[in-house]
Length: 100
Picture 1: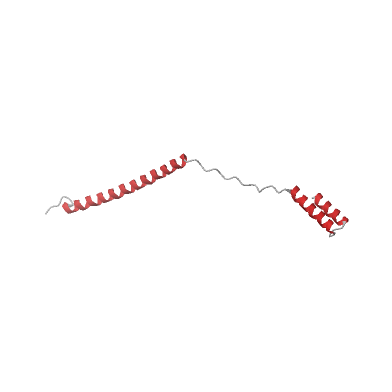
Picture 2: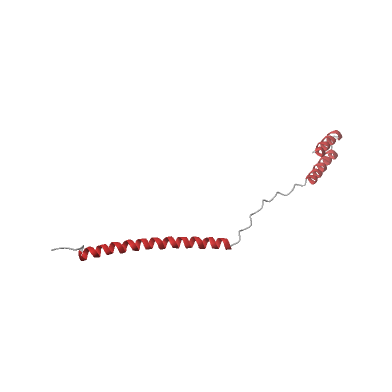
């Protein structure tokens, strides 16, 4: 018998291989396009949403040195009145506080 081609089974096998390859390639292309479209959508949504404000560093409240100094002077005066500090000690501590 003289054969001219792969025959019916060979042709069917070749068609199945070609169809399977085409299906795999088509699936890969579709997944790639879906991923690309999803990325573009995410970028568009991100561009539409306003950015949250950047929190500014909060400075600690300024200590009231004058109030603290007044409180220390009042304590020194109380100690002087109680007799714990002498006049010279009181004046020396007062000068140290005022010098800063």
